[in-house]
Amino acid sequence: MKARGWSLSACALSICVAAASLALTVPQAAAAGAASGAQYPTVPDRLYGVAAVSADDVWAVGLYPTGSLALNWNGSTWAEYETANGYYNGVAASSAADVWAVGGTNWGSPSAPLAEHWNGSSWTDVATPDPPGGGYFNSVAATSPSNAWAVGAVAPGGPGVPAATTPLIEHWNGKTWTIQHVQDPPHGGLLNSVAATSASDAWAVGWTGPNSGASGTLIEHWNGKTWTRVPSPNLPGSGKSFLKGVTAISAGNAWAVGAAVVGNVEHTLTMDWNGEKWTYAPSPTPGGDSSLQGVTFSWTNNIWAFGYTNPSRCSSGGPPCQTLIEHWNSIHQRWSVIPSPNPPAGYLNQLEAGAAVSRTDIWAVGTTDYASTLVVHWNGTSWS
Image 1 (cartoon, rainbow, N blue to C red):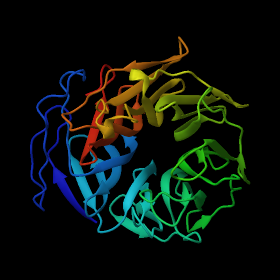
Image 2: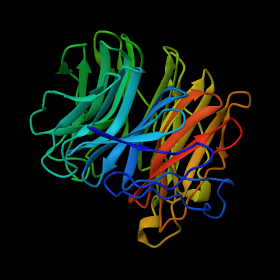
Image 3: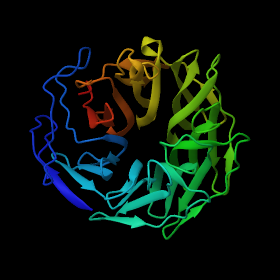
Image 4: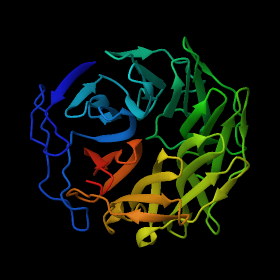
């Protein structure tokens, strides 16, 4: 991988041109209704995952027009790392010298799982076993150099190919990746996100049914020996429910988020694990049509969820999709919508994932119009 350095201050962003004549554009103002004073470093295409090691070491990964994309924040400057093939869906770090980025070799067909590792100085492609028929990773979690999990789907193509899928889980033991046994749901399914607190406590979430049409939530748990499906609620009154993100604070505290189809629109879906069972937690659905894509925590009961509004309508001439950020207030025990930035867009601003360094240092990433990356930051007072 080749790194490109950009002079991007968190407070004052300048326009730069990368070595390959890739322009970094910074819109002067956000769209109406966005948080004031927002500025956006952008490069072509989109970001799907983010991991925060420290205030001066944050990784964001995704898809670039010519291959996978990784961005690193060192406290004052973003650097870009681009490879020639594949794409990244997720990133995780147990330390500054132990970072994993995962995805697939082809957004279309055929596709195989892709895993790359950062050792503190360079990225290296690490071999992963290919499931029969192909597949890809959606997410990764790492608790130490000898314990990482990657989850996704066994499928004939990548995420861009509607097809029957089954869940895929692979484990890193410090030397090799191996496919793990997971009982397939009766009608198939896939896993979108994974989180772990230790070598004996990990959660993976997604949905049952084919890639092109989820039917119900799916949650799997690792207890140190086996993966077991755990009962999980669907949104009451919904036709389809699905989970897109999970975060684990401790063995007795975890959150999962997603959405559910009600009529012809989507409603946000959140649930929490109390050590005994998963329980549905009502969350706002701005505009009557919203979806949550990712979730993170900054301390025990400080939970943030990320997504977008109007997912059912913005691509067909309806209201534009706008970023959505929700926060769990542990005192009042409810979710609330927090104002979030929206740069100028043709039809869509979408947040996919978030990662926290502390309660006053949180990052969220996504895309504008699936054409440029979107990065926003929480400084303890507002998102910008």
